[in-house]
Image: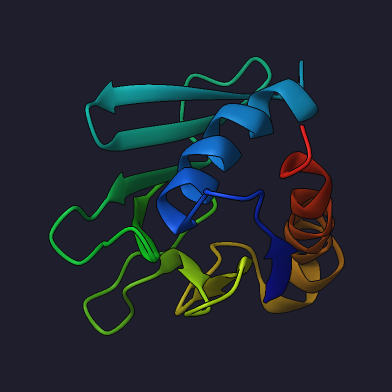
Length: 135
C-alpha cells in the first residue's frame, strides 16, 4: 500500500488512468501497456507476446474517489475462484491523498521468488507514483 498526493482538482479515477499511461513511459522499453477494449489493459514485458498481467477497470464499482481494476489474468497472476486480485486507487475523503493498493493478488511465482523479485518491482512502482502526480 502506498499513499500519493494528488494535484489540485484530481481524483482516484485520474490517478488510475494516469498510472496506466505513466507506467510504459517510466518502464520503457521493458514494459508496454495495451488496451484490449475500452476498459481492458494488458501489461507486457519486452519481447513477450503473452501479457504479464491483465486488468479490467470496473465501471460499476468505481467512483471518482475509488478506481477499481480487477486482475483477470496474465502469466504473473494466478486467477482462482476464491481470490479476486485487484488494484485499487482510493482517495481519502476531503483530502488530496490517494491510497494505492493491490489486494487478494496471488502471484504465479513461488512465494520466495515473488518476495525478492516481483514484489520489489511492485513496491518500487508504488513509490514512484508520488512523482507521477507532479508531472
